Every structure is written in C-alpha cells, then in structure tokens.
Image (cartoon, rainbow, N blue to C red; front, side, top):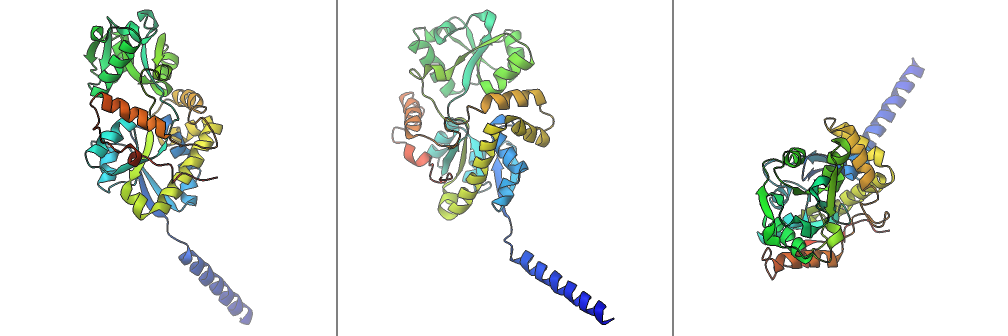
Length: 329
C-alpha cells in the first residue's frame, strides 16, 4: 500500500509539473491572411508553410481566407484582417483613398503577365495588335498599358479594338473569337490553355517590353500601417514563416503543389504541378532573399500611373512599401 501511495504521489507531482509547464507556454496568436484570388501557385509558400507548421512554430495560429466582395486591402484598412495578398495596381489607389496599407514583400520578383492569343492569329509583338481585338476588363490601367505598348512598338493604338470580357474563361473567348488577345498570367492561364487544354497559343510577355512599360509587383503581400507600428514583431514572425515557405517552394515545387492541392482538392493537380515548376525559379532572382522589393520598380510603376493620370502627382511612393520586416541573414 505504501508503495502504491508513493507511486500515485509521484505521478500526481509529475502531472502537476507538466500542467504548470503547459500553462507557461504562450498561446498562439490568431492571424488572418486574405488571398487575392482562389488558391493557386502564387500562394505556394503560404500553403507550404502552413502545412509544414512554420506559422505554428512562429507562435501563429493562421487562418487563410479566400476573397469575398470586400477586397483584402479594404479589410486590412478596416482592421478586419492582418495580412493580404494583393497587387501594386490595387495598393496605390487604395492608399490614395486613405487606406493605410503597406506592401511588405513581393511574391514574384518580376511581372509574369502576358498578352495571349491563338498562334494562328499572328500576334507576335505589340504593334501587331493594330486591327485586332483585345478582351478588356475595362480598367484604365489596361487601356494605358495596351496603348503604350502598341505605340512604343511602332503600331497604331487607335486601331486596337477594346472588347469587354464576358467571362474570365479565356479558352472560350479565344476559340469562339470573342477577342483576339487578352491579359493573362503565364504561371496559370498560359499553362492551362497551352498544356492542359491543348491550344496552340502564343504570348507577348510584358517583361520583354520594359523599355515601353514598367515592371511591377503583382502579386505582393501587404499589411496595415497600424500593425507595423503596434506589433512589428508579429509582422516579422509572419514574414519569417512565409519566407521559409517560399524558400521551400523554390526548392521543392512538387511539395508546394501538393500542399495547395491538399487544401483545395478541386484544383487540377497537373496544372498545380506544372505551374509550381514554372514559378519555382521565378519567385526571386536570389533564392536566399525571397520577397525583396526595389525602390526603382516602385518609382517606375507609380511614375507610369502618374504619366497616365492614374495616380496623383504627390503620391508618396516610399510610404507604400518596405523591406524592413523581412528576415535578415
């Protein structure tokens, strides 16, 4: 009996000690991140970091939210989200409208946009768009980009027909000749149309014409100025875990594709794999420094907006972005 009592007392002491240690462990901090679109390979590092526990290791209980009627930047500004995937062309007007949102990392180092068309259409360079139709979302930025590209390449921008897109199904739009070309992202739409749907497509990459139009960050990761002021350590911890995820996505694209597919099994697995492989070497010019932005890229992009009356002359570009919270070697 004495032996049993001693054993029970020892077990109780051990349980009490373990409970005390558990009570001393800090609770995970709830953090929300809003996507800019449905899950795709632009978000590879986010899903891979979540799957591998990097956010939990950083003391973060992360919730990933798909976008709704309210944009992620609006939710950031209203204090209803902590981070958001967005684009430079969205962040600039948001700041002009009073939203104190700041880009803290670029997801991809350079613009991966292109103008896509069926190869049979014969569109090989911007000036070829004259006499053809462009499927337009109806934004002023689009029109400025198309006109600048065509004119800079020696074509007549007035000869380009801007046709409103009836849907974002580019396969139908191209094959049913609703338009001749449209603005797509190569890592997703071009791969899907060419390698999954089997269409013979050609592209005019924006990055090939930076002597005419600027490079810019699309997508990027943003947070609120309030977070930067009130809880900079949270921003650093989030970005450290996110950076780790993108570093893994660069080194292990199939793991990145698998992480997204696990979270969103409705997405075509082959498209995820091909896209993850295509993006892996393009997330950053330096695999050891994901997320880094450059002042010249921001200045050139905002300058383009200002030249086309799409941003105020006094816009404070320096306040729109920062690299100060990215991991430091």
